Image (cartoon, rainbow, N blue to C red; front, side, top):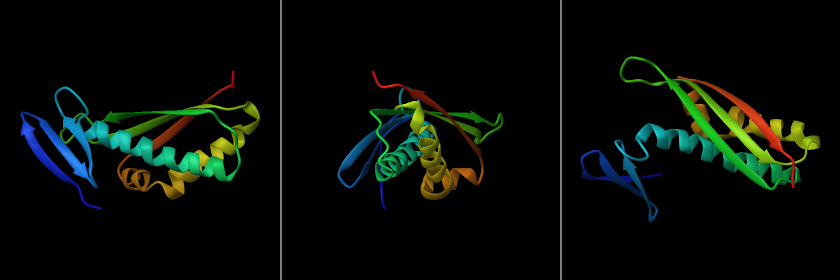
Length: 131
């Protein structure tokens, strides 16, 4: 894996990987740390979707909110990360969704594995019934 990040001005950069681009703006947009949290959510989300599909668990939507508490002193690293999974599915599949989340966070998600070396990762689950 390789990325190329180019400074634009101030605290603005553009990063490219395999033809895709993402803007980094530490002052007014996605900061590097916010991108790290988004990467964790995306990594785990891909796992959870794949696992639920393999388990044939029906669901309609998945939203992942990631929030981190940081240390007070520089370099202000993440102490605790809380991930909230909001999924549209019936209550009867709760145990399977929990299993998918835990497999992701404990076994498959490489971003979680890297962050866990310095941070505590916790999660919660909110099931919303299908309309």
